Image (tube, rainbow, N blue to C red):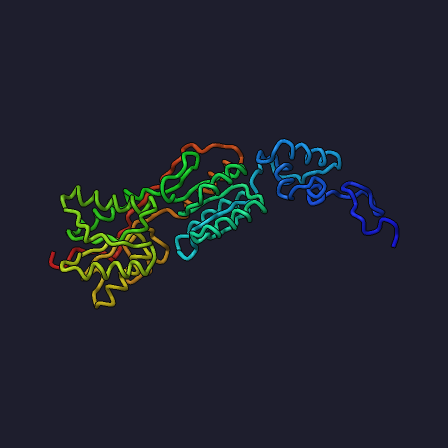
Length: 353
């Protein structure tokens, strides 16, 4: 073996073929730090200690490392989009909006589901550190306080879509006018003559769920219709809970003449429960949903629902987190996009009205 063959070559030393091109990996090895840490120094990130930054910058200067040129104004290169679960059509609509803005900005998107489990959330955080993501969009999910603190320590901006519980004062949030949507749906049914209106609620931990229920209650109160706790049944935004909730309402001694489900998926479950009992929509019972997922217009009958601008919420969240990555503060820490009642054929006056 030739003397020195196979030995580790110092960054920036010459090889027989000419000057070596130093890499971030070599710089990281010599500095005794991770590759993402060197990347943060190269990109001017603040989440690196002063001692580490000085050591890495000295090596970068010593070996003449040159960063690849980027377009003027370019800052973020990767966004993390995090859901509790991905088994819902509304998640696809949010992903569509985020991806559209990310693509226009030349930014990649990593989509993850943490399934509400602490271990999965910690694993996601480990992966986040490794890929040095420049921003996080969190959708209807809850992170442990320690993980929120870790994001702040790393200097990774966070935007929350449909927050669960009260969001931190430093975290911009994106939502919809859920209270107004809940009120509009209930007022529509009241206007048709319904007075016993069942409500299948969403997870109470979510602010959007509580706002939709509050809108339902407010509409009944304004109309002078007493709110009956028996007509409010639990749900979780998914089909099965809509099916179970509607059956619970149908089993009442005096069942409702209309059902307002706090999500389109639960409305589908409610319709299936009605069909299972030989009841027709809207002749025997009117049904209203919430979301206006694309397939709702193709149901038989097409579903009356509250349109929630899910794709636009994703777009706005992406724009805000990209601005934060460029140190541009949002105009408002809390933004609610307008909902809209879409009346189709699943609602009609009650029988005999």
